[in-house]
Length: 498
Image (cartoon, rainbow, N blue to C red; front, side, top):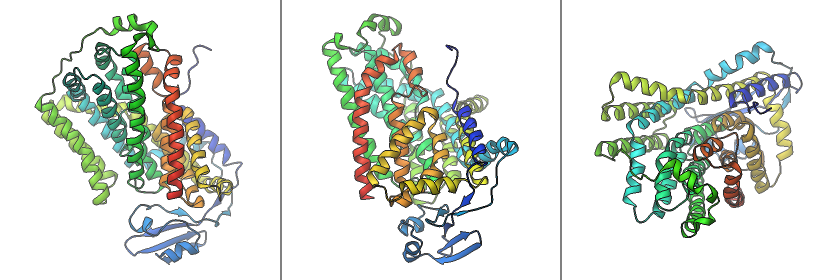
């Protein structure tokens, strides 16, 4: 029993795919009528089992179809995928998916999600190049030296910068490399290793929880929900600021207490062992040269350009991917990385995220099975009957915990997004809230559970610092409770304001 391990996200998704294939033999087949907006002709296309019909693109049309979405959501490009028309569900002849369909589903899913997968792989290559240049390491080391004598600012800087990385490009697994660099700095400032662990891990977790431009959650989930990823961005930015502030106050409070009275440290009994393990050096071999500053500037500008392109120039995955590819080439040139080495590093960086890419494909394959088996709309139909008319606040908060629970089995944010969004997002239409609220509940539910999720990154991070999971829970659970209650309050407020 000790040798048994929890299966990977890929295996879990394949098991779910097999289960879904079986469900197509049990659940009745059915389909909603769908509505899509034709930007060129400024008309709606209504698709039914009897064919396609053209309708005027007006709010009157939407009202007549009982679609609770403002017309501008279609005309400004926020919703560009076909949506289900409420109260139009009809049962159809069954189309069960057999073994051959199950085997082909991941391949079909990879093909359907090719644009997202290429974006993920190119970003992986870019991060690999960035890590090779040492720009991340040098930047953090520079901050630590500048703030000497004002050590509390180290906590603020590290937590804030890593949260920015989490919210923009999903900085998570990469933070494992920061622990050996930063823990000696925190120890020299008379903090304990828990403060360093909290600054790095909580910074990453709150950043990814409140993702703004993160391709692995915000963009993928919005795409799967049929909306532009910039929809709901203002709310996510507000949550990022407020939740990061809460986390910073929490960490600073504990750090101040430990600095004044070391015996109040949760890991005080490990103090000598940890200091012996990490030493007391506060010097990094890398200096933040002008070249590394330029590299960091270009890296940041990739996201600035991406945001501008998507919000103002109608860019999508091809253009976004191109930006990151050009950014990687520019950074490689500035760092004077030889062509052969550049390609090797880039490919290895992309391969580090190949697992994420496969997760996206397998998860999309599950949607393919459900669609081909004609059960997606049936599940949606029965789910909408339960949620239809439900209080907006209750609905959004219920989904918060649903996503949190599901993340135990599917800790991958990208896998969760493409698996659940096609089913969950249309439920917002029946409740009368924007689909961006479903994307938000998905992010916050997964993000909150990520603080303690044993199938996520926390156990690997704790292993580096040599801190037990029980001590981490003792430290972080009050913060998790505070963030959960705060998130529930904010979701309720924005659900009614939506």
